[in-house]
Image (cartoon, one colour):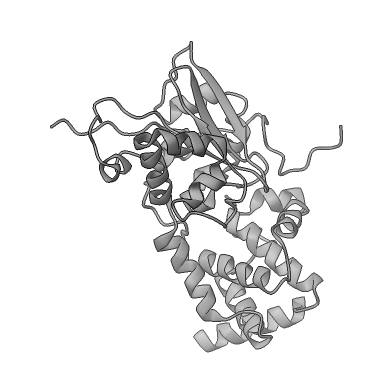
Amino acid sequence: MGIRGVHDLGGETGFGAIDWDVPDDAGPFKEAWEGRVVGNLFCMMGAQLCMPDMVRAAIESMPPEDYRDSTYYEKWLTAVTNILIMRGLITEESLTARMAELEAEGA
Amino acid sequence: MASDGMRKVVTKPDLRIRAIESLLIEKGIVDPATVDTVVELYEKKIGPRTGARVVAKAWSDPDFKARLLEDGSEAMKELGVSGMQAEHMIVVENTDDVHNVLVCTLCSCYPWAVLGLPPSWYKSDPYRARVVREPRKVLAEFGLDVPEGKEVRVWDSNAELRYLVLPQRPDGTDGMSEEELAELVTRNSMIGTGIAKSPAPA
């Protein structure tokens, strides 16, 4: 038996109530950016930049405390960021710079 | 969920994905119209109503039901449902003796093609951890008491294999059309954390 990853939750104890009361017609995205993450990821898959396995691997290789500390689509966004950096398509610097530009435009 | 104060993973997710999208547009990898289409698809078009049609058809047509249980992916193609992780679909039938419930303990695998994107609780740590250890207790929290004598089977989905629960047809639905029956099929009844609705009294 190897060491269990942080994502391997089946049967783990210590978890509380399930926040299950979600209507059938509730939209899948709580915030608009979550949908953009999914859409961008689909485009990346369409461009053969990644496969679902890579996304999963990127999520599962997050440091455990970051994994636990992130919402579902924050994990996806982390995976998208890391895959793009790994592919050499963006860098931390180019991303930070573009975020600052967009923030300045919106201000 | 964490508070933002100590966050080092993803800050300003809205700004971050906008920046990523704009960089990828420049590189010709992302077309913003395609992103819009994907978002609209999952917000408006792909959802549990598709699965409800499959279930209603299975309730109405024994031959279709037999084909569906034999090879879910092939049978669903008859209703125009394919792709989107529906390549290997296994349909598990609830009966008087067996109640089935779905989970993805590792993450969020889910039959997208028939149910859309999963609800938040399906992806949550407590559901993934607990439903395999104490399914009856979890189902009770969803308001579903499974009788002692009934077996509960928990199916752990994965990237290659997706499940769909075929709920039991409610009593008092003889003679109802497929469209009427589909109205009784809830998302949770197809995950197994609920059962189909009973028809409104006439």
